[in-house]
Length: 147
Image (cartoon, rainbow, N blue to C red; front, side, top):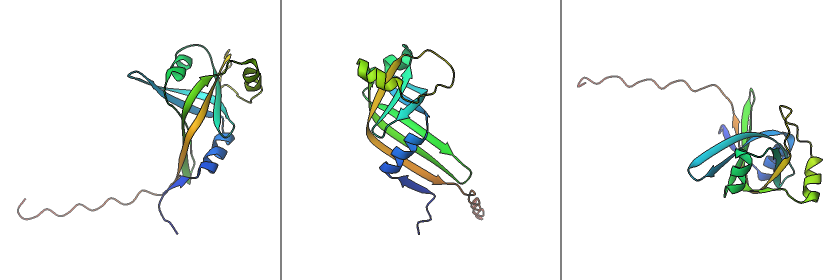
């Protein structure tokens, strides 16, 4: 039995975890600036959809070559993190927008957010961390007679 406190999470389980939660973070780089934003989202297995208002988040995520999406959980006995990489696109067709409006995306605060963004996931990975007591510090070596 593997006693390692760190284990990779399968892609299938990563997809289930993404679908089970609704709050995460997007990160992207535009030029020399790295940005991270919290978002409420919906995951359908192959993509993340979120809504936003016009501004830095919308402009930046659409300009970025690669968008990183991350969720995590810290519990008493274990913690985990799921990270997805992909390309973001602005939903513009009336069919796509109508479908996105029916998704259960629940903002933390009531704001007007009429723009929908979809991140099509190219890569997905995760790690599970089994929490345990910290190991005892190693005893310091005794000073030698020549010190």
